Image (cartoon, rainbow, N blue to C red):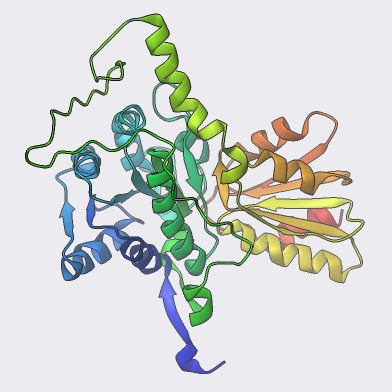
Length: 365
């Protein structure tokens, strides 16, 4: 392929480009390593297309700006890292309750607390799912490189509009800050096996704030269809079941994985994010040694792609889960596959990446 058909791009630029191509016209965020590159790109590029980019006074204000803009019809995105995500928590709940289409990019770094700002991790996986009150389902996607970061950001906007919910792009420091040489074809076309996102909305319609429109009553408290606060049990039950069911009832539609299956494989390696790149190399190394092994890369983390995981693990004796934390997503794999499946974790929390050899050593004990 000719040099002009390839480009050097990092994940921050890819995410910003994906947002703009998805129609994003509002961004607000606060500087935080390693997510600041996304903020810088959006502040520079949005005005060129008539959009608005704001550096808020803090994370709480920034996500609040995004919710307000989305309710007024904008396509909104914000980006942060672990400590900022903690400050987002209350307003994420507001987004769930008011059914706001919003994209939240979380660039994970080593924690807890301030942790190591320049070291990567995948330690926010469970917090992304459970970090706001109520425990209602959310949608989270995870890219492994810059090209996937672009396409999954576009997809996040599509899912946010369809489900009327905050959608997370759960990435990590290495994906966002590492430049990859990517073919123009990969940037231009999403993988052919990724299903299209239907246009029909499932969540509540967005309110209309246009001059002369009927009064809009928006309420982040438990409310009836007219927006009035209520304690009526039947009304509250219907509201809360709707917030959960619009995602859980469509879990099959939301599943997005890449399965590298080998006939007769007795071992399955599961990973996501930057660690999936090491997992791919580990699978290739094990096969070169004569082992039969399959690989499963997860692009959708929440809802958990349970059907895809069960299908990939069928017929295997052993499942290896590699991730940059203490085993947060391994718990989900164990839950899905049950106690009869041997699930082994490969984990690292010292700021370094998991090397292919560390995964392959579990495949080749």
